[in-house]
Length: 333
Ligand SMILES: [Zn+2]
Image (cartoon, rainbow, N blue to C red; front, side, top):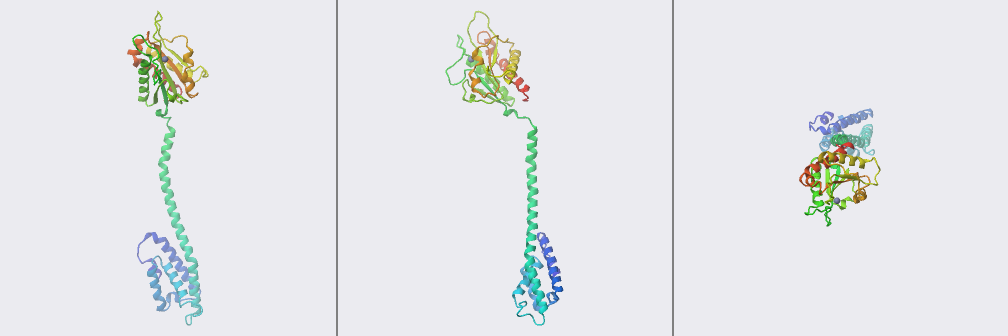
């Protein structure tokens, strides 16, 4: 019986534990049966032996289960009822009955134990798999945390003065040259250059709706001065930040960086004096209070016309070099 149960050679590994547990269980039952004085469990008559083989075939999962099922059937059959014990085998019947009861009691426990082991094995395997799946995203997140804020998340706004849907050319020269077209050419070049470096640069209209509560790393509004003939050579740039902003903050730093780099690139001198139109520029009020912002009057349309119209690349370089100076100063690389 034991030999047949262990060595029937079905070779299914996943049943190995269950089979081993059943075999041990079978031995225990048999030993307890022997202690009860029963020898007929294994060496009984041929009539008892025959259903055991049938039960084995009916329950191939293990000889323990088969034996338990067999014993249960015996308990229900003619072999075990206390009223009709086999002739001359009361003790043997009691042994059978005790073994069957043990089988009925222990078998669910064995099944529960086996199911528990299988569940634990599956859970552990799933746990390991989940840990492996988590490992890759975690490593990526750690690597991303070590990197600085990427440039494409650094928003930089460039306002092309007087550009937009409104009929406002800004300053106009006698031959028709407008401040708006000069501003737009330079602003587009600045935006394209910053985008080429990977920054989130935006070209904005004078009254762009995006300027409301505009949040950015920096905002620079580009204008040009008038085309009036003052009777003398009038040249130079002006730069201003919002009058309401605190001194010594990022707005001052932006103004300093843009002014110095613009002077270096264009060779223009800064004009003394500043109009309230600049320091109380409307965009300074509209944008988010923490967005550093300056307005740059790039030059006079009459006196600096050649620079502004024929050397717009140099003008644009002065602006974006100033912005890059500011970004470097605040730690954006
Ligand atoms: Zn203007």
